[in-house]
Image 1 (tube, rainbow, N blue to C red):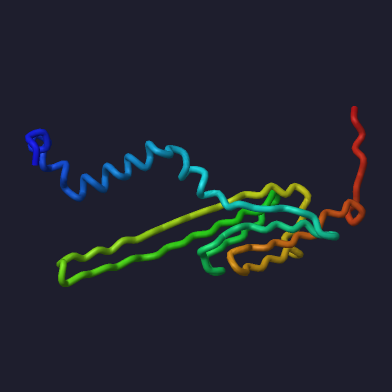
Image 2 (cartoon, rainbow, N blue to C red; image 1 turned 180 degrees about the horizontal axis):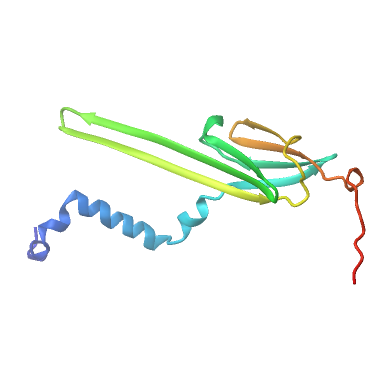
Length: 147
């Protein structure tokens, strides 16, 4: 070891500090990268009389996905919780970690009057939502006089 290395306090060579510094390094390398990752990516298109929404939610089970209807749109939420437990008797260490990942997306849909005809299917990491398009003829319209 050189004399320069000996001047550096030993406390900073500790594993806990190494992990802490790596977290800071990751943040400074891409400070907003993780902010944008948590939004579910969607494709929307029309097919016949339906609006189709395909949402990418890989790595989760169907039971970990929630689809909520609101008068002004749909909210897709996917939560993934897992644990990692590791032991090594030879090296004499034990590690247990918990992971939580939550992604969500709100899709504004102003022309959906009811959730009763909305269908959803999850397969191979894709949530496919089928929504009947709004038909103005089936609703009573009334012109409003302007004073």
